[in-house]
Length: 175
Image (cartoon, rainbow, N blue to C red; front, side, top):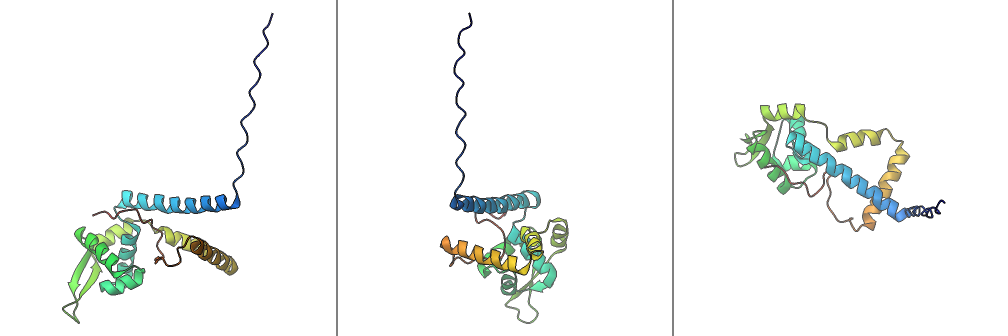
């Protein structure tokens, strides 16, 4: 005689759908994660952070600049740019030269080695993102901007100074 087969267990309950609020938080987390992964791969593959790469790109474009001019051009504080320049100079990627107009100030120029490194490095994440954004209709860009500004306000991030560079805060710059 056959013994009765054990009852079939009930399937696990379906996961509950995410609320709109949770979907928004998940989307923000994906953005943060994408920026973090890109920044880590940039540091790993090229030994440069996004802001360091932005400074090199700007020096390539300008030729020479004072640290103050460079800070304004890349939308970073002068103190941040000073730290970046020290690291780039230690790696022979930039040169400091006394200003011909005022010997007390310096001009920064990209070195030959810096130009070579820049030529082999990828574009910044925000460059590709800007290209994607520019393909959208003007109304779509305006809507995205307004929504993101509202999200920033909801996160109490209105007063946080932020440059237009997609880099996470916890990535440390290579020395």
